[in-house]
Each structure stands twice: as structure tokens, then as C-alpha cells.
Image 1 (cartoon, rainbow, N blue to C red):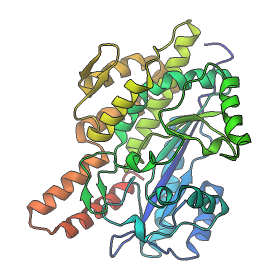
Image 2 (cartoon, rainbow, N blue to C red):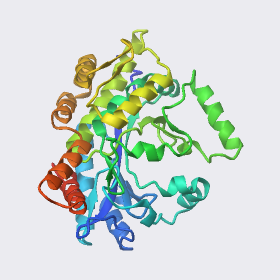
Image 3 (spheres, rainbow, N blue to C red):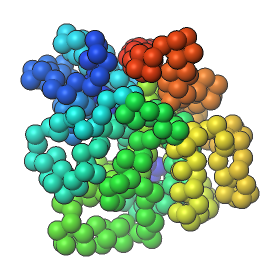
Image 4 (cartoon, rainbow, N blue to C red):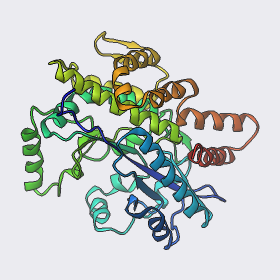
Length: 378
């Protein structure tokens, strides 16, 4: 591939919700010492989030997917250990099954104070969590080119990650309700398309000079050039409840980016489709996960998701070998066979209700399942 091949290093950020192990509701006021205890175990790899009922971890810069698994497992174990001593547990889910946003308190930080002041009710509803995956793309121009092409695959990644079917105690009918909340903010959704890095920087500068944003970290697209690292940061995914699923999606994502780079070295590229069509697939992924297929934009028809993934896995086979993640990518098929976290939550709720449980108790059972699955495989 030549000396100029990107590093394709990986970094994964996961946001968790903190639940009371007795009530199963969100912990509105976690103990003051909790963050200090978490920082003692995880160092700078753990941070507070917008709401006090949330916590975020981030891996180190990882050379391969095996390092990602090892570091994520360690971070999850540490957070579970710290919170358990306070009767609290983390759940890797993008919404809580029944707790209300109206009861939550935001973390006292200047950044979060400014966000609440600017966004008002749209920000106060942000009881949502996501998984962000950074892939090392060192060249600025390449980063923009790959962002333009990678947008096509964002709905596919979302469909495999759904973990937010419930909101305030109700089945929303969507597998990923999280994005309906996040999309209320400006500068979200499918990324814009730019002809060059300079064009991207000009647009960011206009907003900065107008006093609309401090820096590019206030651009919250589903995929963006990171404002802090030489990476492409994919943000569309719900947080994966199971560690295995998070690892599978991170490896799939890295392989797609390498495939797009490989095409570029042969003077080829992925066809660019209009944001309108990509947004349509994004909606289908939010609504159905992978149950009802996505539009094959080249064919102009809805195709079973399994067929799309078979084709994609064939396209990235060489890249999975090169990145040493062939086994991890196979985890995508495990998600397809047993379902996402959203599928599992809905099934658990339905089984509990069918056995005579009240709606309230059935939702508590869903939380118990999320607690267990978040700790699985560590």
C-alpha cells in the first residue's frame, strides 16, 4: 500500500447511564466521591458527562482491535467495580427504559452550562448515550475525502448498534430513539460534503468568527474530522450493550475506511450519493434496525440487510486481513443472528408482560438485563 498509508489507529469512547441497583432508575445525584474514585482507577480515560447520571470512558490510542477490546474491557470492569460499592451499576444503553429527562441534573461545568443556556429544552432532554469511534487518518485532505465517501455506510453502522427502543417508559416503535433527541440540536445528522480540507476549514471559520461556535468540537455530525485528534470520528452509533458488539462494529468501521483508502490508491472511489438518500436509509435504521432492509442506492430498491452485509464483508475481506481483525468482523453476523440490544430489550419486556408482570416491573427487568449484558465478556 506504500509508506503513506494512514495509521488506522483506533480509539473508542463509550457513554454509560448510571442506575440505582435497587430502584433501577437513573441516579440523579451520584455520590460526590464517585468520579474521584473512577479517576483513581482509570485516570484521564474517564470523564463526567453532560448529565450527572452519565459517565464516559475512552480507550487509549490503540494500534489494533485487540488493544481496543482489552482496554474497553478494563474500563468497563473498573466502572462496574467503582459504582458497585455505591449500589450503582452502569448500563451501556443509549436511553434508559423508564426514567424521565425532567428529573435529571446536568454536571456543573462551564461547557455544559453554556450548552444548556444556548440549547435550552433541546439540551435538557439529552439523556442519551452513544459510542464514538476514532480512526487515525493522518492526512487532512484524505480525511475529508474519506468522510465524503464514508457517509454512505453510516446507516449500516447505526442499524447494527441500536440500543434505545424505550423512552420514558414507552416503547417508541423505533430501535434507535436516541437520534430523534439528538437531532433537535443544530449541526447534527449526516455530515456536509466538502471538496477539500481548506473548504471545510473556511466553513468552520465562518461560524467561529460569527461567535456561533468556539471550535469544531461543537459540530456534532454523525461523522466528523475530530477537533482534537488527526482522526475521523464516527458518532452515529448507539452505545453497544455487549462488549463483543462494540468490538465488531469498531473493526467493521476501520475496515470500511481502509477499503475506501485502498480504492483511492487505484484511482477509484465509492460513488457519492445525495444526503437525501443517505438520510432515508438513516431513518430506516432508526426505525427498524436491520429488520426491514436498507436501500441499495445503486439498485434503487430496498434489499435485505443480510445481503448488504454479505456484500460488504466480501468487499472488506482483504482489509480485515491487513488490519488483523477477521475474527472480530465476524461478530457482525452474531449481531444479525441474535439481534441488537434494542431487540433484546423489547423481547425481554414482552416476555415479562406475557408472564403477568406489570409494565413497571417489566421495564425494571429490562434494566436488569442491561446491567448483566454490559458486564458480559469482561
